Length: 72
Image (tube, rainbow, N blue to C red; front, side, top):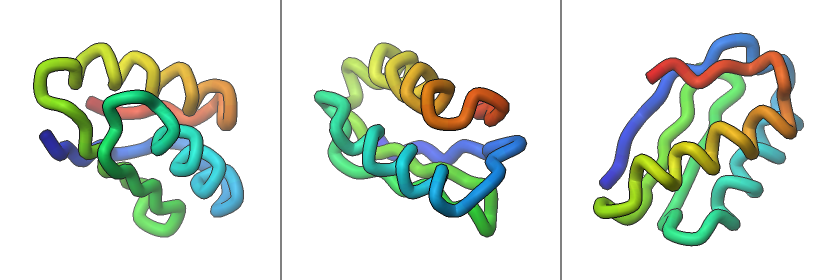
């Protein structure tokens, strides 16, 4: 399953790259991209575990950029 999300308050391109790399390391994630310019994130992950994987994605993003919010 592949879904796109809008990001709010992502402050820099470096943080976006860190978030993207951390998300790709989560078990069950096939691919991910985080764009600072468009403030959007795309996550491609296993269908059956997508909700659980997204909970991990939110935690990872909060560690890298505490002010950033993922708008679902």
